[in-house]
Image (cartoon, rainbow, N blue to C red):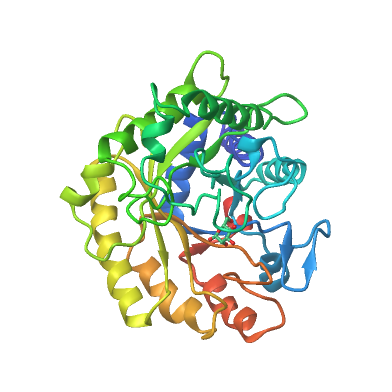
Length: 363
Ligand code: BMA
């Protein structure tokens, strides 16, 4: 009897450990489970390039620093809307698809953002940055793409291209890959055309709804594949009034995130991030949502102890955080660990902390 029970338990564990989620419900359960165990570390564009290398199969600055993959990998769709072969950071969409599948199959979590171009100006301008880009923050762009707006039809072709890419995220066996989708991020700032000074709260919510309804509609087979995330930027004094003004609503959002970078002083970063996470962790617990640091980082890590001296205490003070994702390791700016440097060596203390989870601890 005892042996049978042990066998059943072992088989149950093997199935749970080796069987990747195939639906948003399963992914949500997995995220909820993992959240009890710690906070996952995430890295944007992790397998494509790092400091001193690009597009070498199997490489990752995180892996080469600590011997483990990030538990969460972030990918960006900017450019897919135009039918481009590469995204805004020159990563071929074929590579993005392949690495999403690989990360899913090795047991990792995938999160996808989208920095689409400006749907009003991108047709008129040459792309001398920021012209025509997500950062060409012209007023009235959101209004122009909503139902009845002059750019609506074009925008729907953009959503269709997003849908086509996302629908192609299937394993060789045809199993759908569930993922976190995080459109229209940092909308409480004014640097993107969907930012708060360029549209009204109702227009913003209509944009989120339009996007979600399209991707969940009949013609899309994505309804049960997407975990929906909403992630405003660091405010420093976020409260329920401010938050609810733009929030797409409990019925639409599964995961609430904060994008928080240390651009100024460490003291400001710690104070503001702590304040916003205090609010967001409480709000998400009350509303039954997951919560994460959906983007974070300290550009080029001038102080390599930042990992364990600054970021770790923030995470430890907010143990309900599902994950903390740092932005990409591009040559022009990096936010992740770099092997063989002080930043990489100090990162090990962050990696070894029981609160932080990397891939092996999640498989
Ligand atoms: C920004 C910068 C840009 C990049 C964009 C999308 O924060 O890193 O260089 O194009 O993210 O990845």
